Amino acid sequence: MDSNTVGFDAHEPPDQSLIDACVHCGFCLTTCPSYRVIGKETDSPRGRIYLMDAINKGEAPLSAASASHFDSCLGCLACTTSCPSGVQYDRLIDSVRSQVNRNHQRPLPINLIRQLIFSLFPYPDRIRLLLGPLALYQWLGVSKVIRSTGLLERFSPQLAAMESNLPAVTPKCFQDNLPETVPAQGKKRYRVGMVLGCVQRVFFSDVNEATARVLSANGCEVVIPRSQGCCSALPAHQGETDQAQALARQMIDSFADTAVDYVIINAAGCGHTLKDYGHILKDDPDYCDKAVAFSDNVRDIQEFLAEVGLTAKLSAVTDTPLKLVYQDACHLRHGQGITQPPRQLLKQIPNVSVADPIDAELCCGSAGVYNMLQPEVANELGQMKVTNLMNTGAALIASSNPGCALQIQKHLELQGKTLPLMHPIELLDKAISGEKLD
Image (cartoon, rainbow, N blue to C red; front, side, top):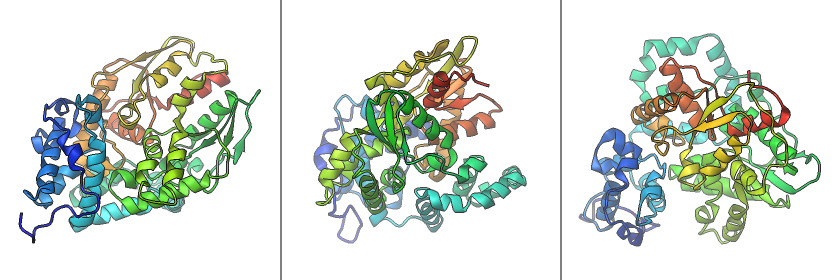
C-alpha cells in the first residue's frame, strides 16, 4: 500500500496482539449472523480480522469495499462466545468502526441517515418533539399507505426500515410518570439507581414502571435522577466515539451524589455499554477511575434479582399452564454472559414453563440501529428469529431489550402472526400484584 492510500490512522488502530490471537479456526462462522445470511468469508469475524491485519500492515486499503465488510457486522458478539481462543473481537470491531468513521467517506444518503439517527435516538426530548406529527401520521393511516406503495423502499431502504420499525405512539409516550425516588416496600434491603434509557423511556415506559415496582416490592429504594440521559450504547456500538464519551460522562455525573448500592438497567444493549464505561473513558484522566467505579456497580435487573433473591410472593399470571419462549438479547447473552437469571426468575412464577428456540444464540437482526442501516440482512435474520420462536409452540414471548422487541413485533406482523411479547420484568410485576394476563 503506497503512502497515498488511506489506511488506519495512528489513533488506536486495532491492536495487533488481539489480531494475532485469532488462530483462524472458523468456530465463529456458524454463529455469525452476517455470515449466515451473506455467506462470504469477508463478512465473517475471521474474514474481518484478516482484513484488519492486512490494513494494519499496509497490505490493503481502508476502501469502500473493506468498510462495507466492517459495516456488515452486527456487533452481536456471538463470535466472542464461540471463540476457543478468547479473541477479543468486540475490542477489534470497536476500534475499526471509529477508524472507518474518521477515515472513510460513506455515500451521502447513508451519512444523512446516520446523522439523523445519532442526532435523534439518543435524546428522548428530541424524540418527543416528533411524537405529535408521528401520532397523526399513524392515526390518519398514512403509514399504511406509504408501506403499501413501496415508494419509500425504492427511494431509501434505510428510511423505509426506520419507518417500518416505528412503534405505536400512545399518550404515555409523552409522559415521564416515575418520581425521582420510589420508596422500598417493607424492610429496605438496598438503595439502587435506575437508568431509564432513550427509546425505552419514550416507547416502553410500562417496562420502566414495572421495573420500579418490582424493585420496590423486593425491598429496594429506587433513585431515578432527572439529569440522566442516554447510556451511549447506540453511538458507542457504531464508532461515534466523541458522542459516546460525552453521554457516558453525563450518565456518571447524574448518579455521582446518589449514594446508591447498584445502578440497575432493564435493557440489554444499554447494560452492556454501561458496564463498559471503563473502556469508553479509559483515556479521560478526569473520568477514567469514576467510569470503572460506576461500571462495577451496574447490574441488569434480572442479574440483580437473581443475585439478591426475591422477597415478594409470586402468584400465577394465568389460571392454566403458560408456556412462554425466552428470547436471548445478544448483549445480554454474549455481551454480559447473562443467560440463566432471566429463565430462573420466570420459572419461579407459578404455572409458567420456559421454552428455548433453536438458534437461541443467533441475533434477531435489530443490533442497535443495524436494522435501519443494513435492512436487507436484518430482515432475513428477523424472519429466522420469528420462525424459530413460533416453532416452540409458546403462547408468549419474553424479551429483555426494546430493540429486539420492535424487531420481533415487526416480523411477527410480516408473517401474519399474533403473539404477545413482554419484558420478563413485566411478567414478574403481574405475578407480584396478582394481576392476570389478558
